[in-house]
Length: 303
Image 1 (cartoon, rainbow, N blue to C red):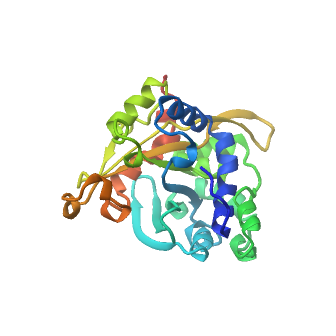
Image 2: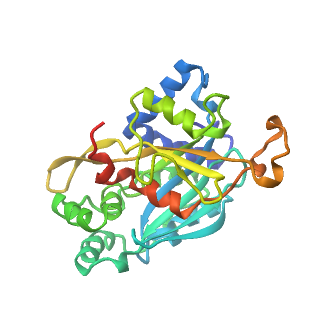
Image 3: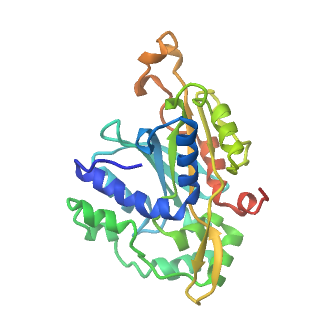
């Protein structure tokens, strides 16, 4: 997924994808399989439905800090979501132009965790005394792009990572991975006929040996039946912790979305369907299970 870098936002987006593609081997595997099958001729043909980030909900970080970047580049803040069991807040952001993906940013409600977990998190996040986005020149796209790869706080010890995992696997993921791109999303409905429903595309993926997240079923569907989502199980990455210990942990993953035509546009010919005719936004129930793509309940399952 690459942009031509005609605008600053193109540069920022491309800088996000470089480390992501290096750390998520399943992306290349799927791209090659799609080209071999004739679904696409080039990865540039893929429509990116949305990208997602995870953050820590502490005063100087979290969504209030992170969103400043995308609001500066013309994104519009939309709906709020709350995930009670996972102790998360989230919002989605609409892009300034259709060629750009929607953005979904979540944050951990750190204050809702145990005192022990809060102390571990603050031990690292307090190394960042002020909002780091305020130190960026948001008009310098290369500087902003580099920010997504910036460590922010020091590497955790493996013991701290394990302790956080016991209470919140989301917290453990963020304490190590920080602002790495969590996932991007292929718009399945934009693919050629025969592969443009999740049922068909998932069957294609599994036939190629791709493991799918089964939390809530392989396909998670909104109550209105107009938004269906699935995802791969996160690729495991070799992590080096502060104490030098090397352990494989969940990295990022790839999502797939099928947005269906809204009832008031059902009369339109398929060739006339545009983005505004499709179900927009997100769904709490779907997203809740997609989060689990990085959880041990999925990553520890045998293929």
